Length: 418
Ligand code: HEM
View 1 (cartoon, rainbow, N blue to C red):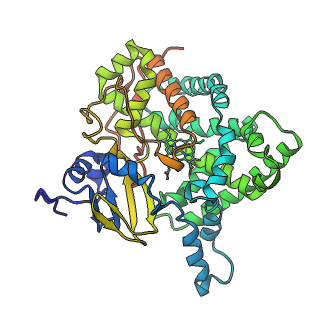
View 2 (cartoon, rainbow, N blue to C red):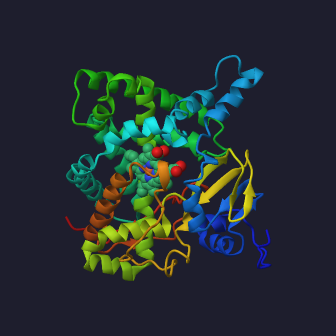
View 3 (cartoon, rainbow, N blue to C red):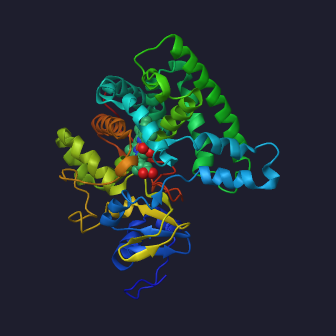
């Protein structure tokens, strides 16, 4: 593309260069063409903070993007027979609040909110610290370079959500596998090379659905203090059906898994690349609160959110029409110099920090407090317990649009502390 400044540059966010470091391209787009039609992405790329922020309130932008897909598939004559594996997977996802508009969204969100009460998250602090410390203990057994994601950032969120949903400890490893299988479909992370991905995901998801169904039955007999019991506590018309409960458990597992893993991994990478900020955090551990907000702003887990246009609307004078697609680029909004002073500088004491790494408006992340708690504890414990932590090579970024996701984070820990 050619920006209004006359400089030619590609607008493809999936080139190896842009996957590694999207910020120069996002900076150019934000400066020269902040509401940009991208032929590469077949979508409008919205890059300024104010436009992203306003888009979350714009009723012309719909989140309901799975149901229309299912309806279109159902209309095709060859679909009249057995539903395919991908139809079944989409059927489960279609019940998720994150891909619903009001009024369906309003009802699901209200029912889920009770399970995310502040006290419930606060009560998890000790358990999360214990889970983090166990993974760090294991990681410290490695003598050479090892992947901090595989050792700590990846297993943590699934274990935490499994614990919160009230699953017995021996079942918790399976949560990770289910989340991965779902990712194969939802993010297409398997790519064309994984032609069997829908079948694989379906097998995993059927197992997961059966598991959650039996957990629901168990909690109906024996309610506890867990999140699932809280989700089931409502009575009357306004309660979740069993299918909805299963879909909700799958969403909570999935939405909080890769995002939190990436939040921890991206945070540690940013600190290792800014040793003066890492030292500052070591010297002033009480900065962990503002540090995590800044790390979420600086290189947060979600790069792009999708919306479908359902009514004609205007963004910064550009007309956007029904049937078109919009990419809200959080990674760009969070580096907008009109909103943040020196946006490319990592400053762990930055305050205020109105980043939108958790989105905004009716869909703003319902798990944000849990994600913050997990990231704060994990980053604080890693920094404290691994004073010799160092990068072992240049990590590679996955080529995905939705997220900022590392393939691996190879580090040496240089010995640890208990
Ligand atoms: C650092 C980690 C996380 C980040 C950066 C993050 C980010 C986001 C963002 C940007 C959205 C808005 C999506 C949209 O507008 O389309 C969202 C929604 C959501 N998140 Fe998170 N999330 C994180 C962790 C979690 C966790 C731990 C959970 C739960 C266990 C969770 C559950 C959800 C759910 C259920 C929604 C949908 C809310 C709705 O549609 O009303 N997230 N998240």
